[in-house]
Amino acid sequence: MGDHHRNPFARGTSAQLPIQTRDCFNRVLGIGDEVIVPELKTPSLTVLAVNPVLDPAAPPNAVSVTLQLLVSFVVKADTATRQFIRIRTAEERGIPPEVIAEAQAAGNGSGGGVTEQ
Image 1 (cartoon, helix red, strand yellow):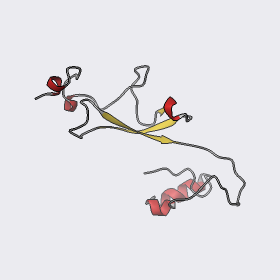
Image 2: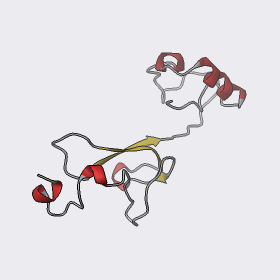
Image 3: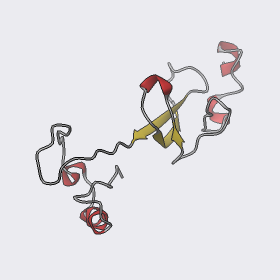
């Protein structure tokens, strides 16, 4: 039974639809786009991925949008800062040493510009 029998508003099967979603102004969201999510009361978020939801229990035509939040803090150098609690080092996260070295060489301190690979 196709999606249109379960959901009369579905525009075909999920496999036939493009893997994309749109913002409130009907603009297609792409990787690297910045978005605002008013419910989160945050500045802007970066779109990292748009993927189909393959769970059979998910509604037809569902896609998952993965966002990344970039936040910048100004703190004193070389002093303990209560705003941060390190969970894992870049090495523990599996970021290659050459990526860390490139970030340090670019002036990002101890790898502050390194993001998930």
